[in-house]
Amino acid sequence: MKKFFSDFKKFISKGNVLDLAVAVVMGNAFTAIVNSLVKSIIMPFICAIFGQNSVADLAFTLNGTPIPYGVFIQAIIDFLLIAFTLFVMLRLLMNAKGLSNKIIKDKPNRSERKELKAMGINLKDRQATLKATKELRESKIVKVESKPTTEQLLSEILAEIKKK
Image (tube, rainbow, N blue to C red; front, side):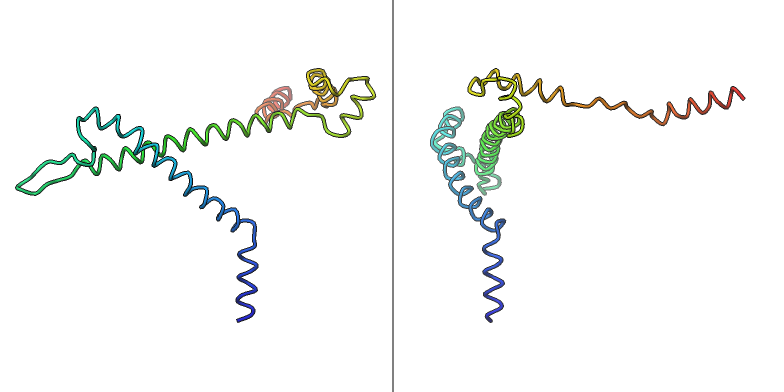
């Protein structure tokens, strides 16, 4: 029994499990926000278009049996609006992450800062530092001659064979 609880403790304290727990809590909070947006703001506009109090109230009768197709339409609209909102939020987050990654990549590392300082670059001047860092990195790039492709090698071999 003691081993069971120690294994459970190891499992629960792993980073992935904690990340998953945080994601579930954040997902629930995000769902509440999106549901409120859909029910309180967007759906009243859609209901005004249909002229009903609620899209879910739409129904037709077939042989005396009501078929509430409005509930299905409501579910589709909810899904599309939630998916669209999630897409927009993720797109914004990814763009922000990409921008922050670009800023981090553009900054000089410790050895580059030493070299820039030795060159007399004012590291407090952001534009000058970024420009000098870019030039420094470009100067360190070694030009490597590209290897011939298989087609080029075969054509050279064929040319040699034809010569003989």
